[in-house]
Length: 370
Image (cartoon, rainbow, N blue to C red; front, side):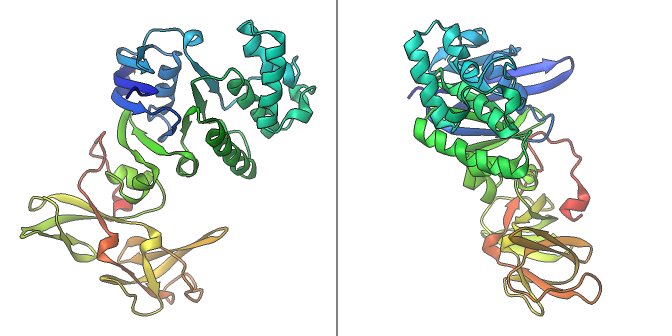
């Protein structure tokens, strides 16, 4: 089967900096594919390589099986949506959206019909005769999206398209983008540093760091089964505790940590191998006295973090911060008197043996609990 996009061993350096390092991945037709990572991870450079705005030093980029590695941007079957809306200030909304069709010498009737349908899709029909200065930020971004959609590209590349909007508008446009994708089934390639957006929108997520792919998988698997410590920390909140393998054999591994010993079934590890225990805050059990679970620890509430519907406790267990989501526990105070018990079931803990693909040897010890 031919992929919508095939990136094969692509590398790009800027001076001595390897922005993209021998990256390979495929994107399927009609997929909503997200590239995420921190600043400097290589995600935006990868998008620019797909767009033809940057030329790779090595490797190939195929679109529907054809080699587009050195084909200029205007000859690629793509459209782009940017963080900055880049609308023509002297043109109306209608003319901004119609611009691409006019550049393609589309018939006037076709332009009228396609622009009308696209403005309806992005809910901007009533603003067709307004200038960009008369629109809000969210409305301007809708025009930018309409301008990309109206030419009916095979692939839409979106570079932090919601980055300049307030949180409420981000959520609104995020849902609208998802609806547009379901309706049109055009291939979307979406770049963001906001893992929350990626989790909500992406069918698959590619996590990048230092020019490398740390993990590429279905969205739910990236969250529940991160491939290494970097992904576990970058995607969502996490509890990560460093340890070492003290015994391995008979299908069991014993890991020693500052929280005590943990026993795991399966896996192939070496004695004294450095490993990390990982579980999500929502899988941390918390109680006023003895928490349930295969492993339980006494601690002191050091912080309470509330973000709308969710409240998290940060519990200091012998100097290790353990995060837990509130589940009906009476509200404790912060400090020495706020003693609680936290626990976790064995099957909720994932054993990780790699800090990151782009290993530097600099793992944040405070976060990992060493």
